[in-house]
Amino acid sequence: MSPRLVVLGPPGAGKTTVGQLLAERLGVSFRDTDEDVVTATGRAISDIFTTDGEPAFRALEEDAVAAGLAEHDGVLALGGGAVLSAATRERLAGHAVVFLNVGTAEGVRRTGLSTARPLLAGVNPRSTFKALLDARLPLYREVATVEVVTDDLEPEQVVDAVLARWRPSAG
Image 1 (cartoon, helix red, strand yellow):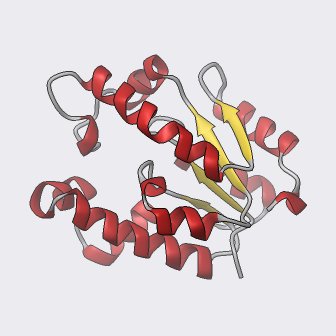
Image 2 (cartoon, rainbow, N blue to C red; image 1 turned 180 degrees about the vertical axis):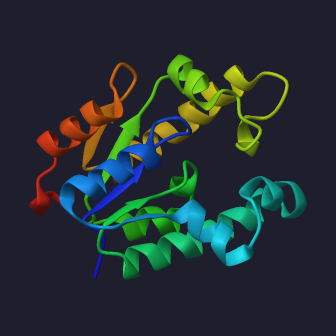
Image 3 (cartoon, one colour; image 1 turned 180 degrees about the horizontal axis):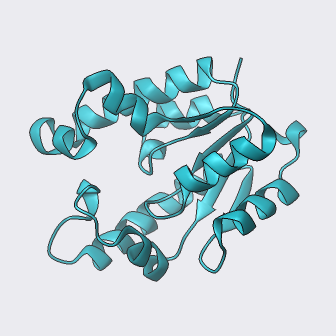
């Protein structure tokens, strides 16, 4: 068993919203690895970051992604930083991976500089978001089989674009 589609991208790209809509359209279930970490630990991701640090969260995230890829046969959304793990990138090989790309200005607008997003908290969230995007962009593209720029699209339009570009045999 493996997911029909894996959805990833930076904060604000629309992974959860678009992932849920994709699952609905495809008639399959939706699973979010960030929610899996919260459920497994009983703690908010921001709490894990603050108390245990980013490396501890990334280890939990890597385990959640591995489990999701092995167990789930619907649409699987990964956290924005999941691609930082070389093991996760290797596990994504052979899967249909949708990269929801979002520009800095739109990503910052959509996230609202949320305190629930620990990596965006700080003195200059816009600069932080841009640095995060610059660092992760090559990793997202390394694993993606489909890329959709979401900046000027409504969620339903993103779903339409994904389904128009995705071929089940592509992953």
